[in-house]
Image (cartoon, rainbow, N blue to C red; front, side):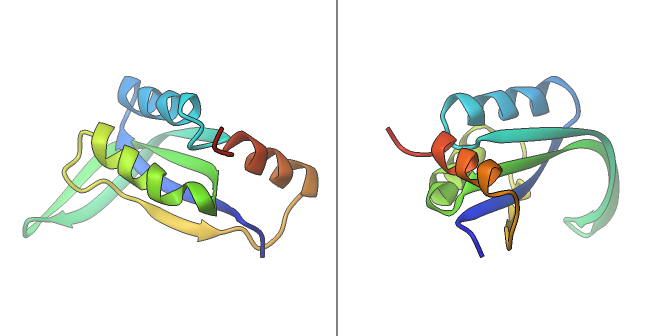
Length: 107
């Protein structure tokens, strides 16, 4: 296992998702954010079954950045309960994982 993490965050499609991704990179909370367009989400919210088209943010970060990343998502995300699911990175390209760590290192 490495110290790298992948975080899933859904967001309103388009400019909102792009703005969140850019903010996380600018603040060095993520090394890379893939914006996967047009994800169809079906979920239960406040007793009703809802469906929306959203964008999925696939955030590459470090374990050390998780708390600050989650806090920033809560600050800038328009949803009252944004998705924030963390997956450990078991293995991967050493060079890529070193880059993720260096890009999320606190200055």
